[in-house]
Length: 333
Ligand SMILES: O=C(O)CCC(=O)C(=O)O
Ligand SMILES: [Fe+2]
Image (cartoon, rainbow, N blue to C red):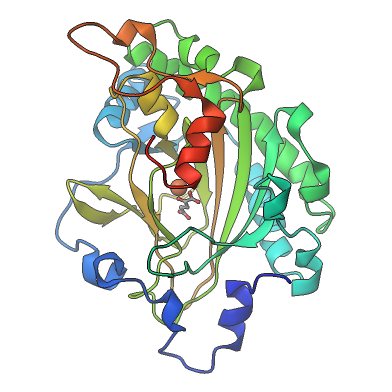
C-alpha cells in the first residue's frame, strides 16, 4: 500500500490550528520553542566571481560554519527557474500519477517519490514529501525514476546538472587549496568523474502549526558537499553555537553545505553543518538539494596529509556505502 503523503494529509485537514499528533515534535525540537530570535551573525554570502577573495572565503566559511551562500555562480536564472518550475509541476500532478514513481524500500535504492521516514524513537514524523533521483554519473541514472511529466522535466534537470558539475569543481578546488593540498585532491578522493550526484526535491505543504512541526529533523548531510536551491519561502535553519538560527533568503544564491565526507577527508578541519527545515503556515516551501558523494565502493577516510602522531585520525577509513549504512540505521560511525 502507498504511504500516505503529507501533501494529501495537508489538503484534507479540517482545522486551521491543529495537526495530527505524530507531526507534533517533542518540545526540545519544536521550532516555536527552540528558534533563537536574538541578534546573530549571518551565514556568509560568498561571491564566486571575486577571484581575489573566493578561495579564503570558502575555506574560512567551511571551517567556521560548514555552510555558505554562493552568489555570482554563473548558473543562468532561467536554468534555475526551469529546474524549479518542472519540480513544482511534478508535485502538483494528481496523487496517483506521482505514485507511479513511488520509492520502493525493498529495492535497496533510495530513488523515487516518498514521504519522510526517518526512524524516530518517539514515533514522530516530518512534514514533507520528496522525490529522489540520481543525476550523475550517467551510468547510474535510472530514468524510470525521473518524472515524464511535465515533458521538459528531463531537459531542465540535465541542463542544471551540467552547470552544477562546473560549480562543484570550483568548490572542491577551493576547499583543497584551503587545506594546503593540490587543487584536484578532494575531487580525486571523491572518485573524480565517478562521484555520485543525487537530487532530492523536498516538498513541504503549508502547515497549520509551523511552531510545532519540522519539515526535516536536525541532521548533517552524509554527502561530501550539498548544493541546494531553495524557493523564496525561508525555512532552513542551522545550529551555530548551540542556537538554531534562520538562513536569510538571498535571491539567486545557491546554499552550499559541507557534509560528513569532507569533514572526514579533512580529518575535522572542515565541519559538516547541523541543520533542519521548518515549514510555513501559508506557503508551499520547496528545496532542491543535490548531494555530491563518493561512489558507493570508494574507500573514505582522513587523507594521509592530515594524520600524524600529534594529530591522529578522528574517523575510520571504510567504504562510502558502509558510512551510509551506519548513518541510515543510526549506528555508530
Ligand atoms: O529544505 C531544506 O532547506 C533542507 C533540506 C535538507 O536538509 C535535506 O533534505 O537534507
Ligand atoms: Fe540536509
